[in-house]
Amino acid sequence: MFRPKRLTVIALVMSTITAGQVQAENLSEALTSAYNNSGLLEQNRALLRAADENVAQAFSALRPVISWSYSANRTSVDVPVETTTDSTTARLNADLTLYAGGSNLLAVEAQKETVLATRQSLRSVEQGVLLRAVQSYMNLRSAQEFLQLRQNNVRVITQEFRAAQDRFDVGEVTRTDVALAEARLAAARSLLASAQGDLAIANEEFRIAVGRVPSGPRNVSPAPVSRSLADAIAFALRNHPSILQQQHSVAAAELAIRRAEAALLPSVSLNGFLSSDQDSNETAQVGVTIGGPIYSGGAIASSIRQVRSNRDASRAGLHLTMLSIEQEVTNAYARLQVARASREATDRQITAARTAFEGVREEATLGSRTTLDVLNAEQELLDAEANRISAQSDEVVASYSVLSAMGLLTADHLNLPVQQYDPAEYYNLVKGAPAVISEQGQALDRVLEAIGKE
Image (cartoon, rainbow, N blue to C red):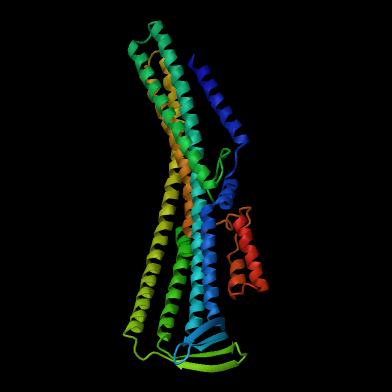
């Protein structure tokens, strides 16, 4: 009596899984949505645009500064006779730094290095967004499969419980067998409720990570990882965004030292003004100012020591980052190998557990096995199937973690069908510090307005 019911349950579960996968989405679609809907990416793109503006502001110091002023005054004198005099003056000022020990040029170069570091930071954020999407996708798929497994388990144990009750009614088994089956059924229902809760949590995590509600994940193969561990480490040390970001930070720190040392040199500036009063008397003046520090109370020397210490800290940070990336790649490879071995082992475990369960169940119908034996065999098969679900998910996540550790988990490397953000586009518009009234400045206003409406 057990076999037809068991086969019916299995057929029902398989048909449910197949029907659910017809409308399912693949991982690439989920990653595409995560890339397009990520608020974290938008936040860091805005921070990159802000860093681009620092280049423009540093570049502006190489240009003349022109300003105007207008003053109106009334002067009253009461000795010996009260007199009142009104005066107005309009003035146009212009200043241009001719030489500052190279400080202004160094400031521009330092800000460029900061921009390059910020671009790498954006790449790191992109990798984090995509890896979280992979994890949420696989967690959702595992949660759905666990739920189906628990539902199947409840159905099977319900059949076992009813069979035990029938056999008790005809005196083949004792009340103990019925109680064991009933207890196992209650435990299975508890695990089913837990699986339902896990699925609700996985759905919400998917919604946050991907930016929309899930439509059901498909079966996923691990990402192709063909490099050896040594090659992967070497590649990561050359290309990982965290390392490149730290390298640009070191370069910016080196430029900061040269800029601080330039403060010891004299500076030369060209200045002039044109003024006119109420009587149309015009005054024009052009001059050159040369100056430099003699004694600053030790402030300049302190700033030089400070930026050197910051440079040393950046170098140490680069070394630590390289060690961290090397460890991350090694750990990711280890997790991938463990997941592969576990998945292969669970496949063999399921085959053996299924054979054992079917044999124990047949022996129970002949009276040589107890209900507890059947329930235990069923539980071993269930555990094996649950282990395979976890191992399959772990293998996929581990493979994409390897790509992330190497710096390859990007929309470009994965060939995602998205319009990728070009960090150089905005930078090229602002690097020359265009004026507001210029054609380029007006184009920038239109770009920012379009970004704000997205």
